[in-house]
Image 1: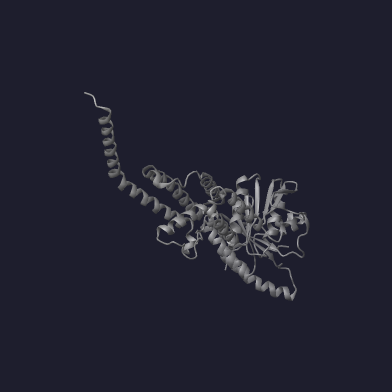
Image 2: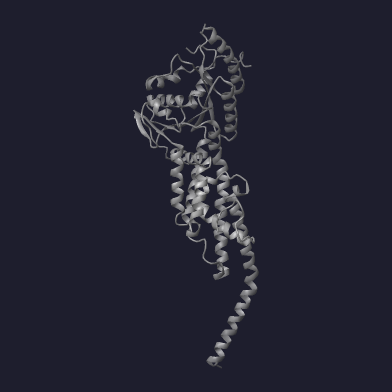
Length: 95
Length: 337
């Protein structure tokens, strides 16, 4: 038995949809968890590297200056994510 | 008081001298007690014994240049047979350090952040810890390269020294977790991009220069800490005068350093008045000094103590300076002259 080319592509289409649904069901919760963890780690990194912004003196401030561009970038991303359009007072002027 | 227990103690003096034979020697103490002079004296003596010696000074007043009668700069310079010396200027060390950081981050800085990164860098350069940090960074390099069988540091005043030397420990812990954190972030970021596809964008890739620089620094600091804590390689010798404030401050510093596991070699009490004096004014001073000397024996009794007499005139020239430490005695009541 053989399928016509129309029927064949329709079947492939269905299979593809089934895969997308499966991926969606499987990945979405996974994706959210990973993304949340990723953001959590980024914030921790921000606090570790530039704790002096929160008034906790960092003993390694001078030895981690190379991280400045990255931390600034993350700081910007962080205040937007926290619902602040402007960066909070006393921090970086990133906008 | 230790006066009856304090027989002249040549063994103790020998212990102090042995500490001063270690490959890495630091002179500490309050400003004005003579540590620059004694560091230069030890360096000259060491070179005179035929050991290739490097003297590293961080004195802003260029006293080492004056003592050795040569112009010294930030690179080792041969002063005489077997003696090399360098004078580090904290301010230019800080400029050099910041320039290095700027160079490393230039490529990683997005143009829209460049101005703010520059502003933050300037703030950091102007803050009080910058010079100290840069100096310490340089210290670790000098120690690391160790091209000399003996290196003598005439260190900055004790408060600063204490912080410098306790930093590697803190730093190793703190920087270690920062680096681990950043690495973890890299892994998570990759996982996130794998599952999210285009939604994650392509940020945060290919900035290994920075991670490498941090790793290199952390490892160098860790190695420095190991050397500093090794009593076979390092000694910290403190210089005091028989006065209240230098004694108090130095005692605090020594206790703290011992607590950090840094080997304290002993104390040199500088400018002790001669016992042979008959002058009424000097006898009065001598009486006051005796109280401070008793206090010194009380506080520093567990460490080797050496005593250097106040000389009629300051040691002049490299020969006299090189013989200075030969005048050191094991007990204050011995006639130093």
